[in-house]
Every structure is written in C-alpha cells, then in structure tokens.
Length: 111
Length: 116
Image (cartoon, rainbow over all chains, first blue to last red; front, side, top):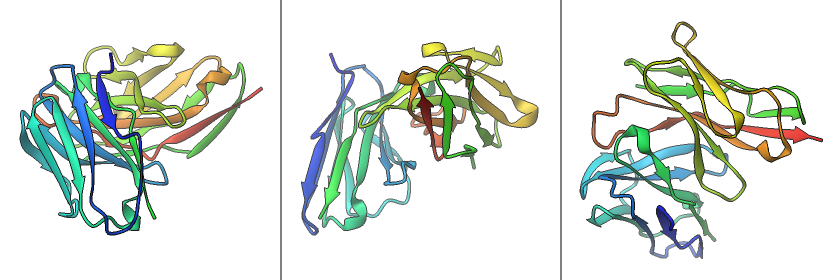
C-alpha cells in the first residue's frame, strides 16, 4: 500500500495550459509538502501545509496554487504553464522531521 | 538560514571500493542531517539521519555517516561499493523538528557511478 501517492506520474502539456497534480498520503501525517526538482536535479521546497493550513510558501509564482481539502491530500494546481515549469514535482509528508516520506514524483514537461 | 554543500557532483568508484560522498552544512541552530538516495526515475528514499545522540549513524544498504560538528560535515561512506549503489545521493539539513511544517534544505546532489 503506497504511503505517499502522486498522480499523474508523467504529464506533458502545452504552454499556457492549466494542470493539476494530486497527492495523497495514508500515513496519518499532519504536514505535507511540495518540492520541485529541476533539470539539474536541484531540489527546493515550494509549499508546506500543516493540517490544511499553509505554513511555508517559498517565493513561488502565484500561478502555482496548492489546495489541501483535508490533511491527507495536498494538490498542486498550475495556471498558464510556462516552459520553465518543466521539472519533477515531489509530494512529501511528515509527522515531524524524523518521518519525511516522499512520493515517487510527477515529471511535468511543458512544450 | 541553512545551506548544504556537496563536494563533487559526480563520484566514480570501482565495485568493491570505498564510497565517500562529502557533505558540509551551514546552520545557525543545531542541525538535523539526512542522506537520501534517488534511483533513476524514482522518488527519494531515506538512507539515514542524524538527530541527536551518537554521531556515527548507520543506515540502510550498508551506508553510514558521521556528524562532525567542528567540521560542519556529515560525510556518507560505505566500505565496499556494489553496482546497485549507482544513484543520485542528496544530503539535507533541517532545523529542530518541533516546528510544524519544517522543511528540508538539500544539497545539489552527487551522482555515484560504480564501475565493474
């Protein structure tokens, strides 16, 4: 049973489109995150939610809007996609820093 | 602010040789340190972590790391490399886990290549 699951695994879309990536965790963790991994493998946090409340927003363009309907879900909606948004997006959850668990990633390609 | 530097974006070793991946950190508070491994087209898997206590930490797959506060380092080692160890390795630092929404700051990653 997958602990942190993301869908879709691959997403290819045209510039200007709007797309969403879904994330669900069944670990009972209170905190969820979105990280972005660029083409050079550099990983950087985008958002963090704790119990549906936004905790961290790391200077991400407002075209990116996270939504947390409940503490088990953290979705990422991206408006007006740009070429530079192409990356792998990782969802993660933790109860505290000891228990970080990552999803398998969503590879977004904007053409 | 916290930061992590991984020396060497690529490391190549022969099968059976010692693996040493370097990580130095900068933190204004006592750090919590982590090593993650990423296999091609997969997510990140935790190898080991240092929080408090013993500074030599043992992880999965025969890896270990030692926290050296005086050197602000947390290097990852494995006595004998195996072909299956070929992957991307990330060092990460975090503050105390007491704050909700605590984030990880990652180094730039080191690609380990293992030659037969």
